[in-house]
Image (cartoon, rainbow, N blue to C red; front, side):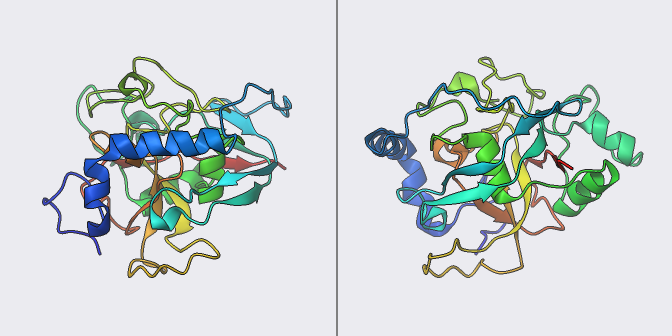
Length: 258
């Protein structure tokens, strides 16, 4: 169950509180497990594929490692997932871009190139208007993680210079400017990102959770001031589609390849 707004900076399940207080040790454990399973980032090149539309990158079809058996219970079981080839936005949608769709959309002065903080319903409407759609959880995780099972979009070691520290950062302003394996920016930290999926357990996961069902949409990637563990490529959280819950939630779109 979500905590009342204002109690915490982020919506965290009660069973996770202790885990996030010790997230540094948790991430070290994940690194050890990832390396032991042969999940060290690789440098193998993917096929070039078709030329992406402006502002998008190409993600090829194929399988990848999804989920995590060491993380939160809703991330398990780790499994092989499959996606078709698709294009995904390199960056999150900005305030300026969203206002081109909805002229009534308001935001602070000087924040044209900051992430548009919107509800799932607003994000889905923009994506449809743009001839795109919101990514599935599998597409988002593959675009962030690649095929080698990495913990963060840039690899298995956390570094604060790789993420936007607070809301003053515009899009792509993290000092290290890291990219995911396919070239996406800001897939960890900055703003949470909407996906198209309802919050449901993965097949084979029989751990009960009252939040499961067609009540909440999944958000990914963590946000400013999130615990480091929330910025992992496998971390899942959930928000009702008609609200942001006063949290920093943006989105990026995908486009099917005809």
